[in-house]
Image (cartoon, rainbow, N blue to C red; front, side, top):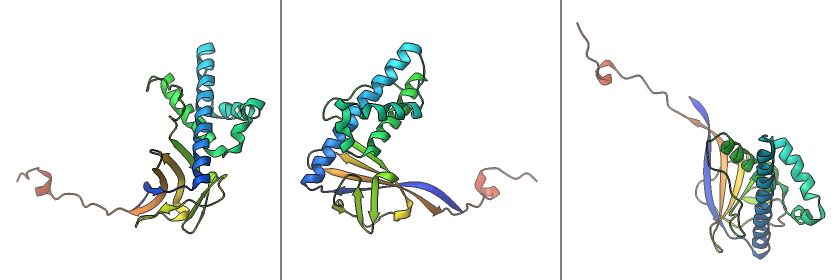
Length: 193
């Protein structure tokens, strides 16, 4: 029997100076979008206890990015910016429904994760190039690596100044052996005659 499963792969990579600068600045842009999105969710909820759809926050984000003071974020890939707005939308609605605590603003340097959906990266052979980057990442590939067609998202994680990780999620078909039902003696029941 075959099942479609999500499987994660994690690798380290060494960004060059330009990539590191771009990644660090993108982390700050994502932090700015997180804090802005949070303020929108909070003001709408407190003002009229209204939930905002993802389409509404996405539309507001586009307008916010086009304001002169915020145009700097347009220099970075829009994919992780949209992904943080989507994630915060989910987190804030979980808070409204009583399933989690209220999200809080992030301080400078607290944003450590960038999520890229399929529109935010380019794959060719062993090369992974993120949107708005000139060169592919120098990845320390392990023995296992997902098929290019199976990859659904790539997450960049800054663990510290020197350690960067790449988490790849892939949807793969795996063969699951069919289990035979236990025989009567194995199931713990006794047969009565």
